[in-house]
Image (cartoon, rainbow, N blue to C red; front, side, top):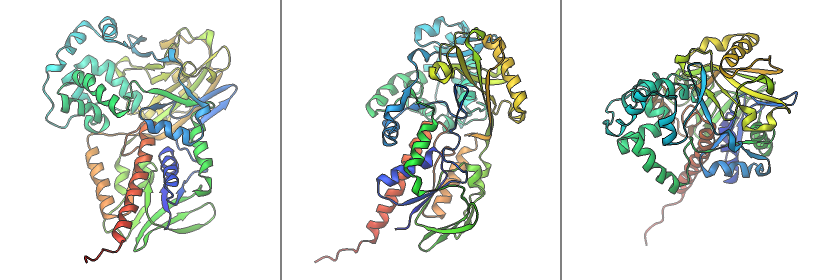
Length: 468
């Protein structure tokens, strides 16, 4: 059998490749960059270990642990420090701890008495009957203050997005499903917890946060090393041609152009990259529509300080900032509180995010300006008094795909492409969720779909028995 072509060497492509190998299905993984891993990058400098992209993996399903074990990283796996579970939201210019219990909720200064009383009405609000943005959904069920001080900062941290543009159905499908099934978010949280326990899945809110000695890059490096004989780096696929025997991939490689024959093609690179690939032999099917999926630009600004020069305790995961508070940064992760070895003795590491849908123009600022903007906000918010002794800035022009109100149209386009281009599969963060755990699970799903397709073709090719 001709190998499967995997286009994209991020975590989804690497996960899918490892699963195909375990199923004895041949493949070739094409990656345009000189390394695999995509946005997962870790910098080691001056005793600091800084993540340039995602900071942790949420262990939401048993398959996450299986991938770690299959990559041979059990001994280097690290869970975040137990004392780093607190999360903060800025209100009136300073961080306020999120309540961790119903009793704590009614005592927290984060929400007014009116907002707390408003929440008591939530179980009695009828289901929504029309397509809604997340902002409309939350405003209807929980009120303006929860939208401003809970959902807006949360969306900035997860999507770097705008709750008034994101679709509740597609960006937060579990939230939408809770209302549709139980008629209430509060009832759904209680009853849904029982179902998650039976299935072995864990909500993202309660999932353990996972990394490795040396950072997340340890995972993608281990996977790439295991799969290296089937990975072709510096290889850009410019055209995919449907043929009678399968697919021909036309590539631009490091020093030449090549064409390779494949049985199937898995597309797991970012949507804006896939949109540049020409399709031939598939009628009117085209990947260009993927270029209409919007991405938020984000700058990751990692800064190290002397511990004595930061007034805040940093006893938690980090802090998110509501748009209404008028800061420049979206939030800050207390990286050295999550994993203490991320900073030298007597120092701390803060990973900060700038830009997003809230202020996309800020991601275009110079490195010096991004550092200055971030330090100014940290002085105001966390009481930072010194200058950074370590800094590293990474800008992603296309950081996170936005599951906005037109996302249902994009999904239909993907389904149409697959229907008109048999053997072509689309998976990844532009379809299956934007979190790192979502991308890993998408890789498993892709491998299963390919295996099912091969098994189906094999069964159809068997001779039909003649009745006696």
